[in-house]
Image (cartoon, rainbow, N blue to C red; front, side):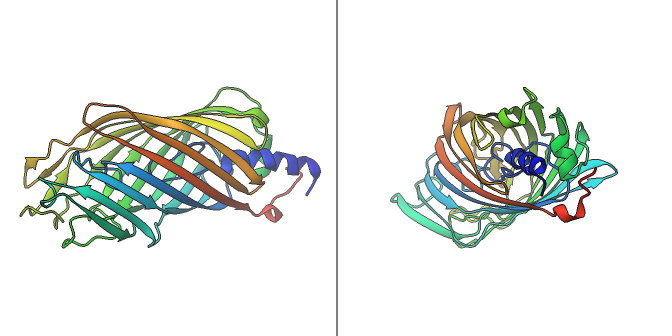
Length: 321
């Protein structure tokens, strides 16, 4: 590999290697990347609060602790000259959670229950709509940073679920998610890049036709939820960067047999994080955050750690291009 290309690739993987998904996608998830890159993201989430592990429903009287280990694989390519990406998050079977839940959701007296297995996962695709050309690794490294807008679709599927249990990691329903993520460069220096990412999305939920709850309900439904995620990140040097995160969500009220649960969520949360490029293809990121403001008794905090490996076959490229 020629020296100049090696340097460019170090800058390149700062933006590519931090693709992460799960409880909020995390920083550097919405940046334009070159085509022909394949990667895997292994993530640990430690969460505490009164939201189910899937992050989509509020249980006001609960105290839930969960350790989730979602794993995401992804690949980038081009469609008629536009950037495209397919990715899937498939949680392994080693996630755990426990909750203290009392009336009216749980039994009397209030007790602690636990669950283990797989949390919800998803299949997804993202396509560039504006400012998102499909460039190979060399061309991408030589190009200027630019404002990009993407269209994204995700299909969420249920994790482990047992209707005989009150508390599960899976939700026994599907989610259709439509998003319009965008990335805004605030300078043109890849070594000391500053990015603002905005990602509005809306989720539509199918019904749970076999509810796991203490009542005799036969159908649990949930209203749509609007989510806006944002990240402001800055590179101090080619390897070290920091980020400030914000996440707003509203909606998502559930109902049992048509009776509303009065658990809709309107809240603003966020936190701070650091990322470090261990090797050109290997990045590490950690951030911590919680709920700042909520009108619905939402509470919680989360520690997230991501280790991401990326690979691009440079032998297929022509250095002269």
